[in-house]
Each structure stands twice: as C-alpha cells, then as structure tokens.
Amino acid sequence: MGFSIVGLFIAASIYIPNLLFIIFKPQNVPKGLKDAGILYTVLERIGQVGVLILLIISKDNYQDVNIDTLFILMILCIVSYIFLWIRYVIKGRDFLLLFKPLVFIPIPMALFPVFAFGFASVWGTSISLGLFVVLFAIGHIVNSWHTYKFLQVKIDKSS
Image (cartoon, rainbow, N blue to C red; front, side, top):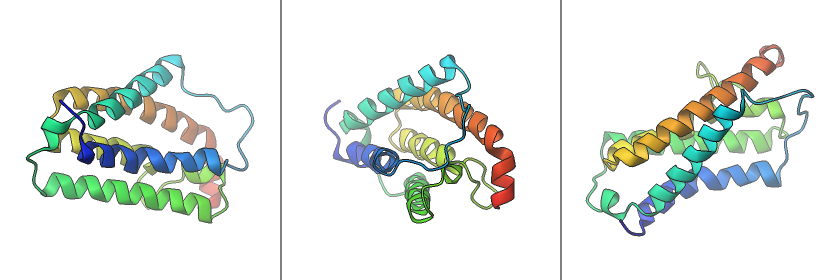
C-alpha cells in the first residue's frame, strides 16, 4: 500500500473528463428520466469511491508492472472514453451523445471506463480493486442501459 502515481494517472484519466459534465451541462435532457433504482445507484457510487481510493493507494500493485496487452487494452479504453467526451462537447453537448452507440458498441461511455478499470485491476493483480470494479460495473452499466432504453427511440432517429 502507498501512493501510486500510476494508479492516480489511471483514476484521473477516467474521472477528470467527467468534470466536463459539470462544466458543460448537457442539453436536451428528457423529462421524466430516472435511474434504474436506488440499489444500482448505491452500487455504482460504492464502486466509484472504492476504485478511486484503491487506485490511488495501490503502489505495490503497479510497482513492477510491464507494458503488455492488458496495459494497451486499458489505454485504448481510456483514449476511447476521452474521445467520446470530446465528441460530446464538440457536437453540442446533447444528452443523447452520452448514450449513443459507437459503431456496434452500445453505451460506450459506460463500458469504456468499466473495461479500463477492469484491465487495470488485472494488470496490477489487485483482487480488491477488481471487486470494486464489479460493483461499479453492475451499477453503472445497469443505470446507463436503463437510460439508453429510455432514449432508444431518439437515439435511433439520430443515427
């Protein structure tokens, strides 16, 4: 345990782009939109906090790691996620863009951070991080899928 610059970089690369949601508020948020339920929201928040803390204090997990396939997959997920945030800002911050599929990938803005954190947990051989990633994944994916289905008609028309 101890402060990890690598873990901080991983966490920051996913969490900092989320500030765009606060700075550049989405347009055209539909009325009547709700999450999938309190259980999924609680799991998502517990997962978010756990992932953030464990990455930052994961010095031992990322001390002797190499650049390998898991690292490259993690970086590809992070870059894709950042690209999607750029797309959101450039294309007018329409709420639909937060859930619009990327080619054949549904809810990519939910899947890419989950996969990035998942690859980070395996790359750093951290079971505890992996457990928090699972909690985050359950809550984040279910909530995002719920919103995606709510928006489905509008997304299909804009494709």
